[in-house]
Image (cartoon, rainbow, N blue to C red):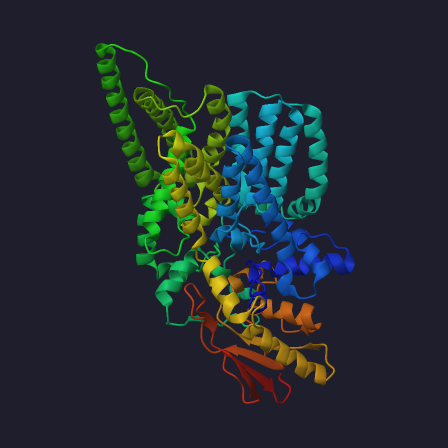
Length: 624
């Protein structure tokens, strides 16, 4: 399903750096030093380039560069989900969680893309190996867990908050810490990370500081790196409002994939109403809480997302309590407990509302410095954790009153590790993630899905729900997950266009120009582009020359046809172009780019072919 229609897609512009790096590795043996530029104009770790190595060795078509590595990571994620599910909840729960995540919109997208936002595969293995560390009380598994985390960070540094769960697990369970395996791991990781660390040392570690401190290092006066600094980006008016909303968080990816890209200050100033709308949503914590559950194609998407979210939160509470049969108590004790529980409940509500108010007014409003906002958020979320512990106590007492037995004390103690593994990174992200980027939370989804599966397979029957009703609820859950924005369109496309699909218009345009050059016996030419882009695609040219208009076209020319484009201008055109590929209108998709350089065609160009929304012009005489 993930690879269906691969011919109709072209490499993502952000992966051009990794594609070129892995080809350099194969051709010359040069080790990849970094990957693409992230949200803060800082270089990411080179993990995606290494993951492209199997596809590059097997296929010459750059459109297939991601599938083998991404498929392997997806398999590792599913295996980790199954092993965790079987260990804590039984085989059926593990199988259900595998189906839910494996065929979810995010899971299927991740199975075919190395355009990463965190590393859910290594997060799952971090949790699984930490659980083995606790149960076997063997310090070598701590080293293995840290190794999984470090490899995940090598793919994408967005996984950074996951490490917070290890000290919490140690405080709760006190498993042993062995020094020798950690020293051996440090030596191995130093070798793996050495090319990136050496590259960063040459840049005074500015990229690492940028990503860990959430600091934008985007350069001013970026147009100085252009061939013509006087050129200005224009905007296509169609769908401008919808595109601006998406462009603020980033460029769209295939089939609903998430992104994270900044836009220019001019664009931001023109979006003040949309920014206010997004601020209102984030003040209600929608991005931080609901983002991972808004994937279904069903009409009541928000309502379904809220039900799934509440199920996850209920699971975290119920997995922390035992419950038991009601014990004989006199009426005075009942009344005393009732009053106590009422007071605690009222206090919890007041604290929750106070926390929400302070978070809204101080932390997410931007009025405090970033460091102060982070400190306040962490302190307040520590208070939220205390509220959670009080609430679990209330829940446990209520379950005891009604005689509901959830699990034994030993099971609660073991399963509490999963509660920690979900709650701790979630709270850290809730406190420190920048506003308006719900994609930061995506790598939590596999573990959230496992907890959700446990709610429907283990906890509902324990709460007295009849088994046929629980089975029906599980069937509805599978339906909700499978009727998503990725799976259904791919099934429809498979039925209409076959598994591989048809070549995209961009590919056919490249093939036409390549065939024309082949007739002339030429292996290089100056090929210009007038395409619709996101502003960062030219703004980042001052940092990396791989960011330019038409960079994904250059990859197709280079690695599919062996043709070198000598036009290196950031804005995509130069006076000496032999060909011009012109996009006549933006893609008819939500979030499609609408910015372009309005460069007039000289009289020396003539139209030779139109393919879809692309017109191909060829120079009749040599330009200056």
